[in-house]
Length: 165
Image 1 (cartoon, rainbow, N blue to C red):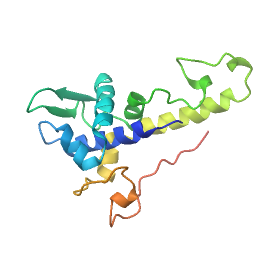
Image 2 (cartoon, rainbow, N blue to C red):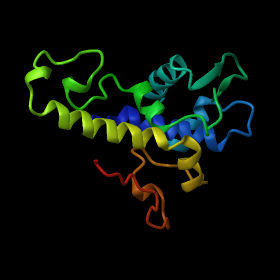
Image 3 (cartoon, rainbow, N blue to C red):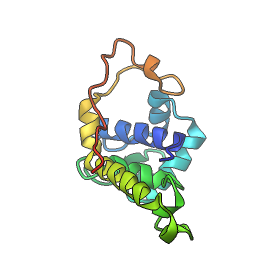
């Protein structure tokens, strides 16, 4: 699957909103400061998340963003699908642009099985699951959000283990 920096940043944005759900609105500058998401990139991602009904925005001086739904109702798949243009690993599993050779392709069945398994697993992981497993960090994150951003953090316990049937 082709997850780009949009997915990485979108997950950071959504986690930030989930961790600040008690606030009426979260200002974009605060997300930029806390998560290290480039400002212009943040705006592009928020437009996509808003268009897909994942976040709400309020304009104006006291405006900001909040989750459109409860974090228990939003999945990692929803977030990735909202921001990625081509999330499908191969054309034969893309509902919008199916491959013309799908009927005769020996690999189309395996690709469908692989993609369906990954999609199903990502659909089972809610934003609340991820937010609960990875508590809010109280320090500023440098650009990129790598592991170095989380000093003293124990190894992550959350896994994306799955089996192909």
